[in-house]
Length: 270
Ligand SMILES: [Zn+2]
Image (cartoon, rainbow, N blue to C red; front, side):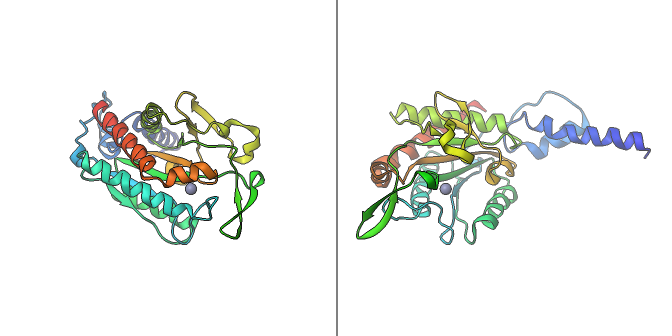
């Protein structure tokens, strides 16, 4: 192959992800062939809830548990309980292929394990469940249960994150908006502090100011997954009141119901 042809071929190959990025999740492999063989309009397959492979990822691991709540409970436990409930709710609404993903080990390797599990399992959708805290500089001290503890009551609310580096950014954003809309309809508010200078390196671009969807390109689980991917910070556990609320089965049911309703709507629109 001549140098010129090699350059043309390289450009052609580099365009393939652009073509793929405008289609729906789970279709990348099939589309790749179509894109190579003959360019034509992509017709998405209908979403069949029973076969739709959703991975509900429990943020962090038992060893690397994420944030510590105002009452010194690890974030991992909050994530595990809510993600388990979201999985059960999705299954009960007909999404039988939904899988709960629990990862072990250290923080950084665990991120790549998650992405590997999602990509190897040809997931159609990746949803990561977390609970929020604040940057260290905002922490205040109090005593809880005889122990020196940290809290910040300044911020509360949930937030949703998507990555522009995900090959299905537009689809991810669509789902995040649907989840945000459902949460809003339940009377819940989103965490608006991510646009504030006080957030420092945690500051993010707000993509949807109505329902609280932020852009977070660098997140491994959002940028490296080949399916559409959304991360939900369900609420703040460093806020003393909201921690109690997040512990209540009522709030957990509300959030799980909102997520399941959004995924149902998402599936119908495909
Ligand atoms: Zn987290």
